[in-house]
Length: 346
Image 1 (cartoon, rainbow, N blue to C red):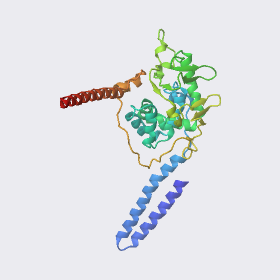
Image 2: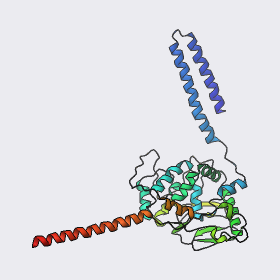
Image 3: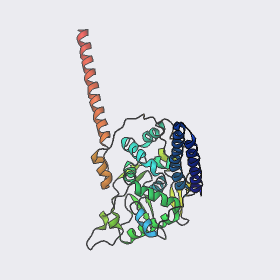
Image 4: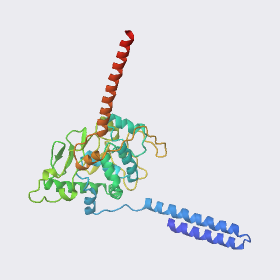
């Protein structure tokens, strides 16, 4: 209806302008009238599709499509899974956040938490919550189509998405791939939960969805199918972003982020603001000031996350070497000063 009304308005405007242009002896005014009408058409072409997209019906995914969507993250620990689903509802913010996380990966704990606040990063707190996980954000940014579909499914079919996660977990558990170990505790029952063995360390599982949700071949060692060797230190410094307070109520099919039910859905996605009482939100139009050194991950650090093995912070080792060299230079300077003072006394 809105598009139809605008079309009538445009047709009448063009007709009126053209009629006026024909009666003018000086065709300049007529040409300007036509140009003004064309400009109006361009504005209609820009704004009407945007309004239609915002007012459009919610997407609908079949169960098998949801299973495929969640397959790569269904075995994530519950706290990490909750944060990923929430962040996926802001796909446009993921690439920029992924770059920031990659360039500041050498920071951790309170240093990283302070840097997030100092830089006044403008993304939603649910996206900020993944900044300690550059490999996860990189995975989401490298396939924005998947991230957008996942976020839209979570907005429109939150409970169906949770059901899909349980279906995938049940497959992996039934075929012997998913089990408790030193990094995670897997609880079976009507619903399968996965939580870190140590709440301060969140492992990021690495697995092939084509393998772990299917029966293993004869003689295949299922113990190597899911690797939990790569983890991120998540302490109390990140509680303002919901770490320690994000979980699932699988029975009621409710996702809790920062200890509050995630109520952002398709209908209120432009107005809803999830509560983060201890965080200040910065407008995306405000000045985004970088106040820290940028150091991208090395290839070995990227492979560690991809292969699910323990990471070794190369930049930290470089800083240790720099500190050792500086100490050596300090010793040398003190020795030279002592020798100079001794010579002067003589």
